Image 1 (spheres, rainbow, N blue to C red):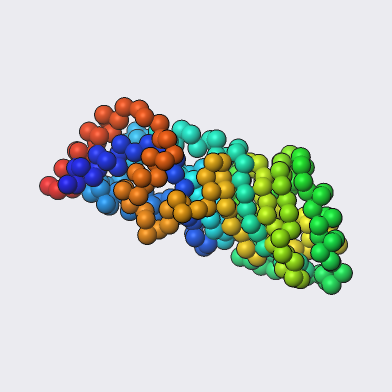
Image 2: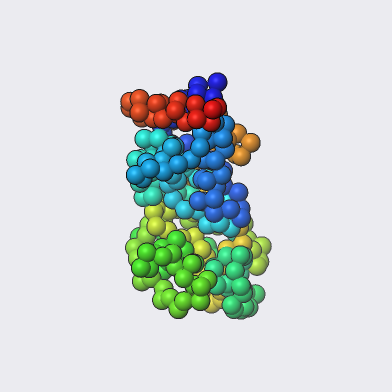
Length: 272
């Protein structure tokens, strides 16, 4: 049975959506998922000459404080993850006016507070026009971007003085205000790769002669995947559910003889 499950797991190829809960990093979510699958298949993780027991990766980091859709690649599907980094994404976010933080969201330390009583729904809607289309955006200091091979967020937490990355071109396809009850406002955002919703909320606050930070952030779409019933939550992180989802997303079909042999050997080692 163990060898059969191992063979089934290592024959899986393609992309599938999982739900990342708030508070966990994208890497932690992926590692948790991978550990569960290896345990179910009776396999141990090992790396030899950079070859892993099970190849898995995700298609773009989601903030640890955020929740929602994380696209995962398994087997040969990991080769397709680059498309997820540049494709269209959708988010629903709630911003808080009058409060700025060092991380640009609720997980950080408050760095500034400003009045927001003068801000109306009409003013917010007018400001959104400045952030639609091709725009320039300064990424957050707390981000996965790197300097000298190390993440900016890690450098900042270590007390290293880091300069903000220069503004870079990004694309916002759609931006709409869905709820306004000061100090909170909710937006639906559709954007391209490399876009930071936290920077958007910061910039909107500044455009309104105040400040703002993200209170809540949910990714609802990435590439062809949406946050729906097919998105696998933790209780469905098993080989059978992933196989079912991959069948509907047309995974690549390539020979996996070597990986099947690894599965059988690994399962036999666990049993012995």
